[in-house]
Length: 196
Image (cartoon, rainbow, N blue to C red):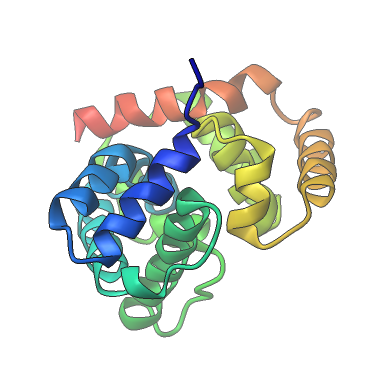
């Protein structure tokens, strides 16, 4: 019995959705809603903002489903999500650097709304020393558990370049915080989110 890969299933659903099958798009939504929401939340650190942007992502995906020609539905959706976050900050925060979403979350008084643990502050401090792309790679690899191939496709980079960027990023933060804190980062942030 042949095993059908998730990407083959995704591509079949896309073909059906392109033919106007809303239920097929609904299945794609069910598959990707949580990882896309988590990706956006880890970039904004504001639950309501992440919910709004996630809604925009799937609306745009449905509107542009006919234009999809790629090999990875996940990479396509993550690219839409990255652009939607940039668009949000472009429209809401005209005077701030829209490429660096990590710093923008602090301006929404997130840190003042919850009693964050020292570990969360350490993670934020260490990751703020990295480039935007390095943070995205850490979020995608450790927090969203994405394979390197999907990360590379969503960032429009070569897989080897993604691996090298991750290695450099980890070397840059290893003297500041233990690697375990980076890996546990989403769990710590999610605990804080639930208190909000």
